[in-house]
Image (tube, rainbow, N blue to C red; front, side, top):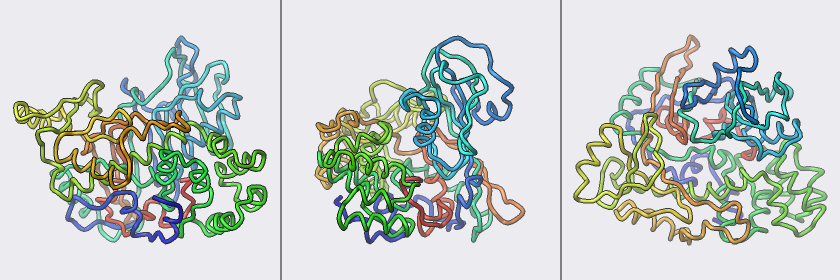
Amino acid sequence: MRQGILANLAPGSVEGFIGIECYVTRHKGVGGVIKRSPEDFQTWEQLLDGLDARSAYESWRGMREGLGDQFLAVMRKRGVDTIRACTMLAKYLGIKPGQIGVCGIKDKMSVSWQFITLPAENMGFDGAEIGEVVRVLPIMRVSWRISPEKLARNIFEIVIREPSGGVEVAQEVLEELRFTGLPNFYGPQRFGISRPITPIVGMLMIEGRIEEAVKAFLAEYSPLESQDNRIARMRLLEDFDPVKALDYFSRTLRYERAILRHLARKPGDYLGALRVLPLRLRRLLVESASALIFNKTLSKMIAEGLLNVVEAGDLAVRLDAFGRPEPGRPIRVSSANLREVERLIARGRLAIVMPAPGYLSPAPRSRKGEILLKTLNELGLELNAFRLRICPEASTRGSLRPIKVPRWMCRASQLEDGSIKLNIELPPGAYATILLREIMKPGSPLAFIGGKSVNSCES
């Protein structure tokens, strides 16, 4: 991937660009769009102990008893992504964003409720409120910091507006998916829907080309983003003057403006400019390159009919009661244990996994592994490249990701205006948009953001 690659991006080519190249269901989709408003996409978390973020927020009557130097709190946000919400909250409380623990990243164009932890001494018992965008309510004192390991599932209420098909079509697709399995692609929002910039920047970071990475983040433009933002990026390409760019880059482009301010103060300090971005975002950029490789590999596996095939040399992991991979070494499938592995997969106890590559990733010794290594080779990468020499804090060890979503639930119902409402439960790391694309069969991922072009750095 090189700079300029997004300039001719067409709506219908976005999914191919991020490695999603197929469907597993044959039924015609219902069409339509989601996220005409944030209220059309509501999502919240449920922890292992059953604590529900939305219920905890809506039934809040004050702090519960507890001990520890952290507050477990629930954050409701609207129209802002998790990284931005935590940055805003940290500034409001006078702490560093890294002091706020989260289970995962929630979309900008949504109403979401998620659990966070933060130092108890920095927030009062009444919580914190930042306009109509973020509100945080403390639940109890705890002695631990929240992490993805505490998350049991994500729950969604999603409304598909203006569908061309009725709820019965959605139900037919869901029935087929229960037979084929739901491929565990990384969703379009992982990369930026109208401006899939994150894997481009991530690849440049991996290659040690930090100046190019920063310039791509700022100036790589897409015809699918808003006209004002596209024109600003094109103008910056002409002279790359950060001081002048601060006058015409929209204030909604907060990360870009932060980088521009740094370069205006310290011309040529591209590594320092990159480090202006929150650490979570820097890591996300590199992990996006890893996610792209996973998607490309999974698409090729599906094309070869391998999604539901267990081979000797595959890697499998045990699943807990919530369908989450258990920690520990993966199981190497062999001719001796293949039948037992197939039996446990059928019972929901095991899942076949593929690396989302990192510098410690094991490669399957099967056809699936051959496809992964070929994909890496096509991009000119080796696994050890994910240990970054420049900006080492953004390195990724990699992870093992089930090739199918292990356990999921979806109910479809028709609303009075003809819209279709979906109630969905997914394990951590699975994307609702991957289920939605099978149900909707949209002509473009823009259907996942209201059918409109928006700036991907905010989405």
